[in-house]
Length: 140
View 1 (tube, one colour):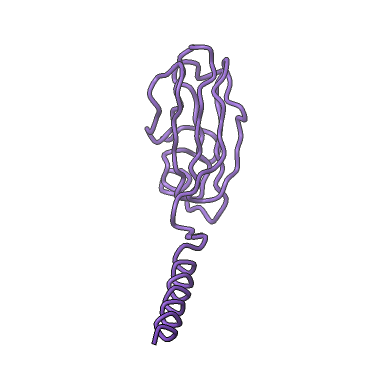
View 2 (tube, helix red, strand yellow; view 1 turned 135 degrees about the vertical axis):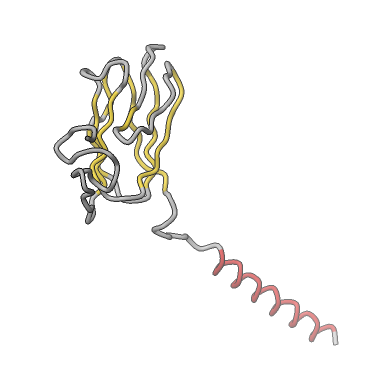
């Protein structure tokens, strides 16, 4: 009788182990945001200033500017706070070309995030409805 109980217990433990393994596998759901590359905000530049990454990737901007205050400002109105240190993240959920700049230093500090894919153009020629034109402008 003890032998039957032990065998049942071992079978139950094995089944639970298989079930736990099946449930905890690497989830690669393409609809879930994934951590991605980072851009350094330093001196008066974004490094790198051009980045290509897949859809549903979160990009992190990290300030290393010695306290000089900057922003990450997109043409669609989304922007970071004005900061001298810290970080800002944005998840890119649609293909397109996302141009950004520092609102304080717009000539010196510009960058672009490119999300490859079949982007559609809106009525003003903006890429993926972002308010940003493919030619580099910041909307109408």
